[in-house]
Image (cartoon, rainbow, N blue to C red; front, side, top):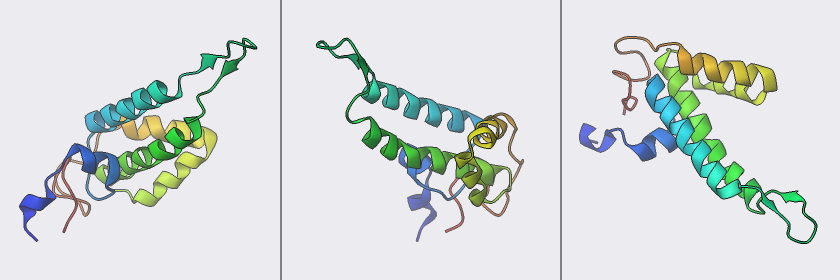
Length: 125
């Protein structure tokens, strides 16, 4: 397989779990997911009862957006030379909140590591 076919892309950043991403890609990817989530899950007021209702597709949108969040976290952990399995910590409420901001704020390792040659690059073939 040629290296040309392993170029990073937006699709890779949001779905793939190989390689590394920097803080900018991590935040932009999560912002994109948040905007898509808000756009599809906006609450609305029921005209009959006046109750605030969540969109009926909200659970499906949440399920679809779950994976890009995990994929971005795994690649961000890889940029710190950490295993992607640590992304499991995101499922723990307080720990997940702290871990999200920690990996989003702490710079990655300079130069190559076992997960890829440089930041914003795909992993070894």
